[in-house]
Amino acid sequence: MTNSHQLKRVDFIFRNENDWEKVLSSTLKRKPAELINELISSELKGRGGAGFPTGLKWKLTSEEKSEEKTIICNADEGEPGTFKDREILSKVPCKVLTAMAVCGHVIGAKKGFIYLRGEYKYLEPELKKAIDEFEYYCKEIDFDFSISIFMGSGAYICGEETALLESMEGRRGEPRNKPPFPSQHGYLGKPTVVNNVETLVHAFTIFKYGAKKFYDLGVQYSRGTKLFSVSGDTPKPGIYELELGMSLQDFVYEFGDGDTKAVQVGGASGFLVPRKKFKDAAIGFKGKLTGISLPTGGSMMLFNSSRSMFNVLDNYLEFFSEESCGQCTPCRVGCQQLLLGIKAVKRGDKPAVYLDKLMRLTETMQLTAKCGLGQSVANSFSSIVENFREEMIY
Amino acid sequence: MDSIQSLIKSLANEYGRKRESLLPIMQAVVDREKFLSEYSMVEIAREIDVPAAEVFGTATFYSFIETKPTGRYIIRICKTITCAMKGKNQVLFAIQDMLKIKLGETTPDKRFSLLETNCLGWCHKAPAMLINNEIYTELTPEKIREILTNYMKKNGEN
Image (cartoon, rainbow over all chains, first blue to last red; front, side, top):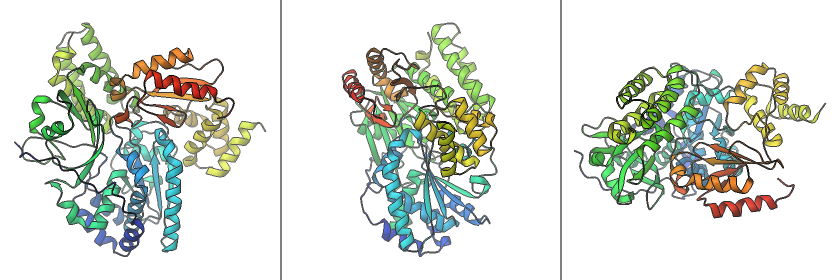
């Protein structure tokens, strides 16, 4: 059992400080190695959902020997239930740009890109203005760095970093084999850092206030704060910055409508937690000694007892079937068969035990799919089928 | 040289004749023509020296690169979980009723096309839809009638 941990609202990300120029010029005076150490000691982990230590990513890329390097801000926010990156880019774009420039200074990149999803095209004009202002200031302080926007065109899979790179290189957004990782072989074969929008804002906070301020928030293995996109059956949908490590029980107490049946943590590729497990579940990265720890890109979708979990799963599987890039068989065929399978069970064309066969299929997908999309279908599928089996059966 | 050829030529001049320019060029053509025809694909292939099959393969991968003729206003309604929970179907029926078209169709006057899309990132203000690049949220059948009426009044302009 985890100790009850009050929800703690924090306000770092959207705090409008308007001092990015100062932060940028003072941070650029510091040595790359010092900045990497600062990031590493803050224990900042990638906020897109996968949770790779950001400092380590920058360090690995900085160690590569190459004339050209690139920093890419991943704004291909496609996970169902996530909308924080849009808010960041429309409210505090200069914090993101500053962190990109600092990353450029650390790894030795002169060029940055923002990969913006096609669905957010309306953000482009304002973002361009912010970039112009930013580049003007960079010139003023004699720092050679430029940023361009690369528009996506409606493909969820391009949020996967290597699919994103393929897309930027003018190809189908099909994930690459790893290794080599982008830190060695990224955009156009050059060492590349790909960071989520929110990760970069946290890096800004760390450079401004120091690693300790960030590290002191959150719990072991899950330091700092996180933006949560709250939606579904809740009286207060929206975006909230909260300390990591909270229990789901406290979260539901704050955001539920009194009749919360289950919460989907981490979007369609995350886990569904039923009411009876709320008190054992904590929001954060793996490594806690007890209870269930739930890593997340920040998507929190609440369902009350009026919702049918069959429909929820059906919606997710349709999403995955459409968004699977089709490159590897386990994911391409697996997603389609799972969708057909649950429908057949619901209609009564297949017996209830067929669900167990489908569960084994998700295990196979978890082991054999090439990227996170196919591997993570098992998360929502098994957590819904295990906990709400009766709703899946005719 | 026809208008598509000269458009593609000028886009290639702007974005460069590299493989990395393929997506921006295709997006710009779709922006102008509202879809990417096979003829445009072949022209792009010729212009930036990439096999036409590769251009076709890349174009058809992305859901926002339309390869069939569409109307001047493309309505994309979000069908992912929260929007679906919050009454997306009622909104969809209101649109279909008003425009007299079904999903995937275009009105005979070539003004509106109706499509479904995956998560638009407005789950806290569901249901949501895009009309070209404009976002509309917290939709209801009443709101739909108001929004579409305004679009119908826009005559000729984009």
